[in-house]
Length: 122
Picture 1: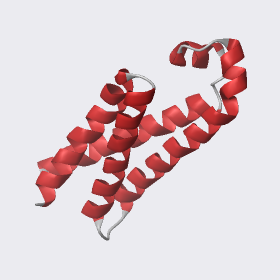
Picture 2 (picture 1 turned 90 degrees about the vertical axis):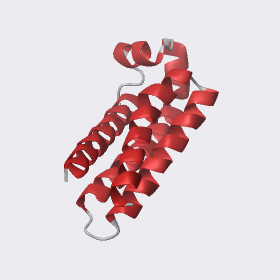
Picture 3 (picture 1 turned 180 degrees about the horizontal axis):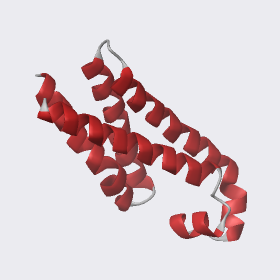
Picture 4 (picture 1 turned 45 degrees about the horizontal axis):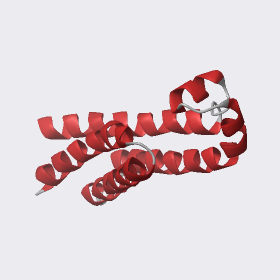
């Protein structure tokens, strides 16, 4: 039971983080806060905003899947494993092509949660 509580809190945190990233990328990308967060210039932010919105929507889908995994009563472990794995793969990809910091900030919590899920349900 303790592992399930920790697991669900961690998954909830990861989902909220991805909602936050969606807001940053979709709505705050061109603001000074968004530019400071992503270390971009106003020119780059303006030119890349459509891509950032698209990226934000992907983060929102990850959040939706994680929330679904917390609320579903069927195949709970499978959903958690799938969506946490998606987050880990996305973090590795972004870490390789954008910044290694993304692997730590986005990927490490998801990897820890994934390990907890796998060990809790096996």
